[in-house]
Image (cartoon, rainbow, N blue to C red):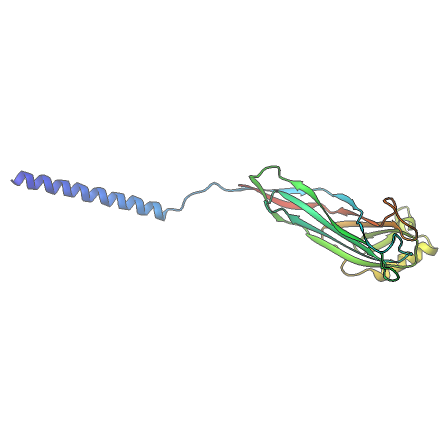
Length: 224
């Protein structure tokens, strides 16, 4: 009889020890955080991008009679799946009087693609937007170059330095007078070029258009 009691007590003792060890292991696994491998993040540099956009005719005839108000905005955006970086370029040229001729629209184009669903664009390190407005008056040919804090006409350049005189000089003076604080160096657009034939019926070759050249764009890409 004593042997049976002893064996029963021994079995109970081992069961107690086993349960205690099991509970301790479970508690330790709860307390110990799961060690995950570090995510790899790389910085990517996108060198200067150039793009030209011809917005469609929205209203009026195909003639600005030498006058138009110009507006343009460039914005960087990340796709919903974070694998592509694209640039949205908005441009509008609108006649301020008479039949209010207007060409305007937005063009979106991809400038970077990870080409891998496991690589995500997580951050844009440089400027993400730049915009501005300019009033153009009394000239037949539209050909202006905007750089941060600088406005000049292409035909007003001598060895890369603004100069010249007459109509070109007046155009440059008007450009400086109408240069708005919106056109500032925000780290996205390096140069804007506006072109077009404003005083005759325009076609694809003479329609008002905008060309931009970006600064170098830096982004962070994470491999998940």
